[in-house]
Amino acid sequence: MKSVNTGHVPTANTPSTTPARGASPGASTAGETSATAARLLDQLRLSQGQSTIARVVQVLEQSGARPAQTLLALRGQTLPVNSDTSLQPGQWVRVARAGNELRLTEQLAPTQTPEARIARQLAQHLPWQHRLDTGMSALRQALQTTAQPATMPQGLSDGARQSIEQLFQQLPRSTQLDSNQRSTTDAIDRVRSWIRDSGLFTESHLARGAKDPAGAPDLKLALSRVITSLLQSRGEPTQAFNRYTPLTSPDLMKAPLQFPPPLTTGTDTNTAQPGRDNASTAQMLRMLSGMLNRINVNQLHSQTLGAAPAAADAPGTPGTPTLLMELPWVDASEQTRFAQMRLEKHGKEDEGASDGEHRQVAQWRLTLSLDLAEAGTVTFELALQQQQLSGRIWADRTKTLHDARETLPDLTRRLTDLGLEVTELECRRGQPAGVRTQLEQRLVDTRA
Image (cartoon, rainbow, N blue to C red; front, side, top):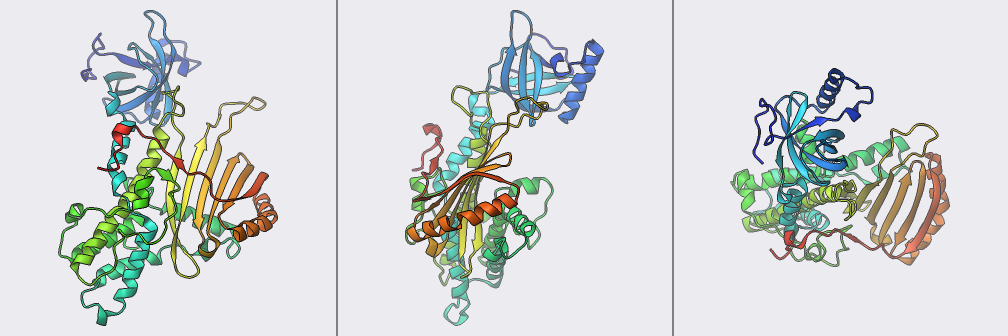
């Protein structure tokens, strides 16, 4: 469909959608309807002539020659409109504001939708992931090795070493995350910062005007600073980084869309080892490229899950808002470890229901997997709906399972002190089955 000039009167070839009268129960005249439409469009911050894309959520009414009443998801809000064009739930369209109307300028093909673009980017990054934990171990080893300059005549440059040191200094320590050693408020604030600086929200923060000062704790920005310093030590511009082929981790190749990812076994043979010359610096740059790709995959994977239809028979419904992130922390022995977190929001809050009416309440589900060295891997599966909490604690070692069961009463008491109603909390041996995302096969080829 051709684009239309928003100054033209709609014709058969320039369909329009008008905010429906139903959106304003009190609108009974043309003037009131027009004012209501203008107010709705102003709330969406859509200026005259500005175009944007919207998703058809539902076709409410369609009979004969009357315009179909349709729900459009537009900029985070649902807008009822009257459309002269036949549309289907799940379809994406491009609209532009013309006065108090939305002109339909284009019906997007399936390959042009935001979901398709995100899926294609995800498929492109999947084959080039490197584990963050083994990568951080290699960086720490490089620091320890270059601390002996007599044996490392061509080790890391001072700038590169300082950027790596800064990366580790800004990671949270286990004592900073322990509510037993800090007030509950301080611990909550620290966890909030931990999540914020995971690298999952980097571009969002930068788009909102956030700066990248020298000490910014964001993981993705910190890794980028290490990359810049390594390139400078080789006399190369920043653009040269795109020429480095990422190192990959074989276990991530086996299950590229499983989160939490499978546990690593032994040393990653593709991890860069600290060396003495520019060749080893090049390997470290390749490893860092793979680590950045791992964060990119988590970002794109989260968007894919949030955009995918909630059910195969409901293509117009949004997916499950999901955040996938890997959170670095430093344990008591100064070893860098990662927590894998999966946070999902199921259902939708019914804010319009009045007191006494049945009100729909969203449920939050959290999966948190921790590698605790001697204690093995411990995974928490929690579900929170309003103030009611239920969950399971998984441990892969017998002693850890025994210790977890002994601490259940104290954990329940502490959760109750926070104002939660613990309906069920149990411990199990082993690990929960990993969740894998299924993409269309034509979009994913991990052998590429």
